[in-house]
Image (cartoon, rainbow, N blue to C red; front, side, top):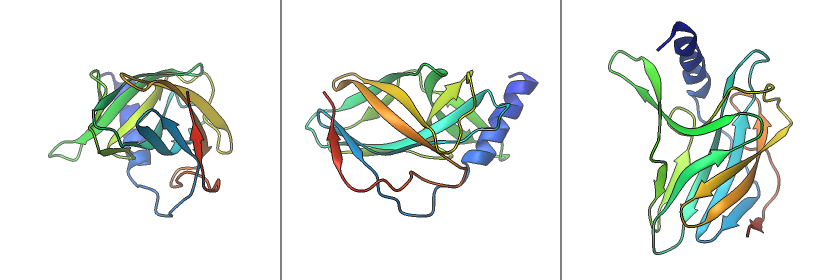
Amino acid sequence: MTFKLTLAVMALAIGLGSAPSVAQTHHDVQAGNLTIHAPFARSSARSASSGAAFLTIENTGATADRLVDARADFAMVQMHVTKVDGNGVATMQHLSDGIEIAAGATVTLEPGAMHVMFMGLKQPLVAGETRRVTLMFEKAGAVEIDFPVVAPGQGAPMMGHGTMQMN
C-alpha cells in the first residue's frame, strides 16, 4: 500500500470509528423484497479524494439477494469493510463479491465496518447536500438512493416517516 493510500485509510478509519448516537427518522426505499433504511454519507474534507456512506438493508423475502455493485457520477463506488488487526491498524478491503442479504436478514453498513466507499471524488461531500447513488442488486435490480451528506459524528438527518416505492 502506498504512503498516500495508507494515510487515506487511516483518516477514514478515524472518521468512521464512531456510530451515530442519536436515533433518527428518515424515508425508506422499497425495492422488491428489500427495504433500504437510513442512508447517509459523511462529509469530506475539501482536499479528500475519498468518502463513505452507510445504510441498512432489510430482506423480508424468502430468498437471499446480493448487493453486487454501485455507481455514481461523482466518484468510483465500491463496497468495503474496515478490519482492525491485532496491532490496532485499520485497513479497508474491497468486497469484490458484494454483500449478501440473506432471506429474512438485515445487514447494516456502518462506520468502522462494511460501508459504501467513494473513491476519486470529483468534489467534496458537503454537509447539507444529497448525493445520488445507484445500488445494483442481483434480484432487486438497480435502485437509486439519495444519500444525505451529514457532518462527521451525525447519522441520517430527520426527514419524517414513510416508505417510497422504487420500480
